[in-house]
Image 1 (cartoon, one colour):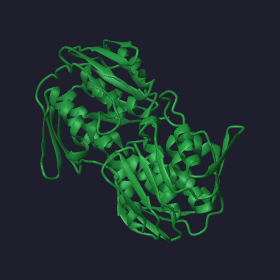
Image 2 (spheres, helix red, strand yellow):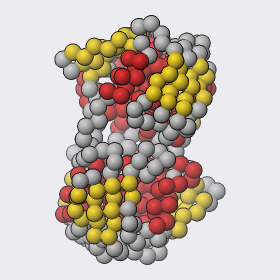
Image 3 (cartoon, helix red, strand yellow):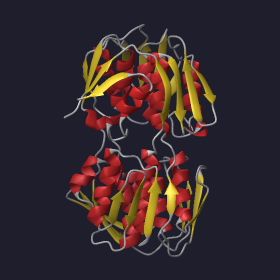
Image 4 (cartoon, one colour):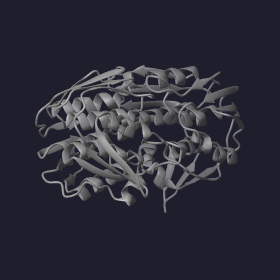
Length: 416
């Protein structure tokens, strides 16, 4: 077990390079199953979730080599169509492999996925969409057995713009000689990244980043070399850390176009944010200002993953703020730990009403999920005294080495 020790109060200055995107890397790794040729992926983050993805690929029969600057995957022969329950239980995004395994093998077996406990996150929308495409699905004893039926061309309309369901349909259809249109598709930048990767493999997919994605018939997919987009949530994490601590930090490699709504929210707290050619420059010179109301929404709305990070900033803001969570029911669970640090807020249904305090105080806290854990670190950076953050394994699911990056910009933080 690891813990992070933070001595708060330091201003943050300098630059930090933003790692590759977790949420883009995982479906791209699944997509490597669609060819028997070698794929080379650059900028794949070295985090526990991608390591779990490597284990899934290995268990299915793919050869994975993870080096410092890139990862190679070759799924020449698959010996298995089932993802073991222990691997499914570690990571919710393991469901992303379903579409790719089905396309390659014709059958697939998964269990209900795990990951952070953020409330009910049913995969019914995935299964309903796959049934619409002719997939036969049987659920027995906690396992989901899938097999291809007759190919169904046409269209799938998602009841909710689910990122995972959109990606699963793309992965399945890219590996099959069929034409499908996805209506009400998720519009996240990670969807665009997956489209770009699949098209480089020889697929013909158009419309990612809009509400309608069309997958055209494609023949045999081949290997390719690709660079994953930067992680916009990691960039938001270090931007929020700068907002609460004060200072001037350059987020090297961050993509401004992916962060418009987050940057707008931080500007509302008093930050100055500039595009500096190499990424984003965040400047904060005073105590954060309160924000009347922010509501989480699918992209291009405010990301649910950033809500806890901004919540930590607003705990020290001058005035009252409201955060409305419209995606995950248990996303506010991080607040109970911030309360131990002196934060003052109240949960009213799906809204967190925050009464900003001038200062938080260091104490021992425990992460219960990935982004909630990052929020505790952000709060600890600005708190008076020492903060100890336990359950760091949650945070390691999405950050290569959060303490290394924060040290580079002046934080007093260490892992033991």
